[in-house]
Length: 610
Image (tube, rainbow, N blue to C red; front, side, top):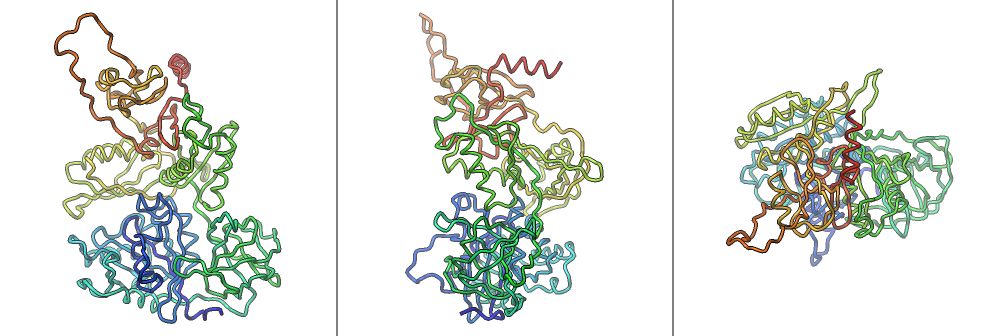
């Protein structure tokens, strides 16, 4: 039995990273009675991937549905990071309104602005949920003013400016229209959604039309298309026409073999589903995001939201280091290539292209986080490969070379302000605003070329002693700003292969910061540290102490090594220069020179300089 369209609400939850939206969805699920009273539930049930749980971020949108009274509320938990903006834009087309979650201490942040702008452009009504009001430093009244200022800045219409505000603690499990309430349940938020967000539009008697907005994949069912029924009714075994998003002339007739609606975290198989519902369907080979499923009697494609173009590219290639094939399960160029092209099934913001080199594939994405999540995913699946330094994708606009810009927001203690302004200025950053922020911090806002940020994040954390907060957001294209020197320090490069010895490391640490400890296996050309100077330096970390007949008293005391720096994946991606690669295996990350042999590397450098 299909649901009456008036009793359906389709809503997306949007927020900045870590403002608590996934925890909020958990509470809505719990309080709607989806789980049994004795059921053991882990926190943040909506984040299904290991990487999502570890990093506390949502990468792919998740669908769920709860019943509140007679109303079915389809809830989509969206990614909060602009790198996954391709996901956000598609999801917003599926819903009729949004719940904007804002931290009661931090207030609106850059990613909040990104997702909210997309929602307002679609004229979606907004319910604002000020979350974490139980934090000791919460300042809900000021945050309300900041949200309203943001609405005005983004040209919200009058209805959107009258959005209801609900104050909540997702962790505490309560919401209220009163900012000072500290108990209760989520009923006020449910009521705000039902009263303020409209039922879907559409005609149940019209020929069926549904737009595929997300793709899932199952080993048993193959590709599963998820989308909203815009008109009519879809039924199992009905013959439908699939219209390709790129070419509406391309039509194929298929039968729907299975149809699902969402209930809690489950997909529930149904015989039919009507207008307004968000459904999943299987049995359609090669179904693509943006395809329209429609009735054969009136095959009309639905408009598809244009996905934002990639801004950053890297080359993924076969690992050819001396340690190649020792740690990975999938190591050949075909295995790596097939896996990357398979990723296109579910990640519409990604581009994968073959290159002139058969062992290398060019992968373009929306930013460093987007590409690093892909690398980490492949690594965990057992793939071994190497990647090049991320490079920014330029565009020609009106005959001019243009580059992607980033709007950067930085909160730092006052003593670090001068350092940040100087560093970003040298990277072609232009300060657009500066004002006192909460907690004794100063907020700095910059417009900077995306390539100027490559390599800066780890430098920023060092410069601010871990006290700085930095957020960035794609901010369109501007004419090329000129050359930028992004790395002021060279690499310490292993001179010979072998095992790193304490004596060799002790002598090497005077030259800069080491990335490895004693006992680490190294090969010639491997980057083992960061030089204190601007140029590269070859060092021998495998060097043993020469033995002599006489032993001076006290000279054999244990050598003290400074603790080495353990580089994360993102830090490695930012650190490597144009003549270096990052070797990625399930067990290790190793930075290395493209040309491993020391003599050949020198000759190549001399040729380039001559």
